[in-house]
Length: 105
Image (cartoon, rainbow, N blue to C red; front, side, top):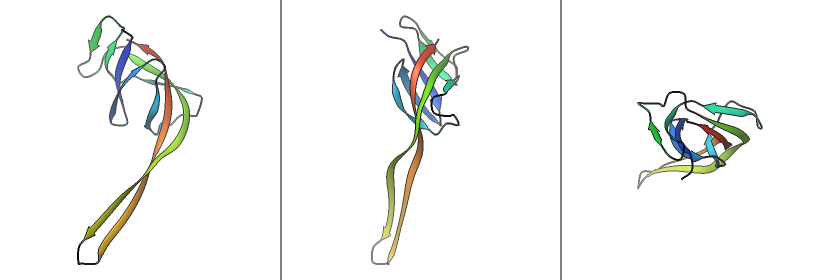
C-alpha cells in the first residue's frame, strides 16, 4: 500500500498520493512555486495510519503549483411561472492546479 494523506484547503478535503495532479481553490502562489499544506487530517506511510484530532501534528503535504485557471461556467436560472420573473446568473470559479510532490507523515 502506498503512502497517502487527507488534507484540507479552501474548505474542502482531498485524499492524495504522491504524483497526483488536481484542482483546488485559488492559492496565492506563483506557477512553478512550492506550497505546503499543514492542515493534514489523516496521514499514512503505507503501513500505519495516523488520524488527527483535528490535525496530525508534524504532518504536511508538499505540492508544486502547475497553473492558475478558471473552472467550468455554472449557470443559476430562477423562474416563477406566469409571473414574468426570470433571473440568470453565471459563475466561473478561480482554480489552481497542483501536483503533489511529497507527503511527510
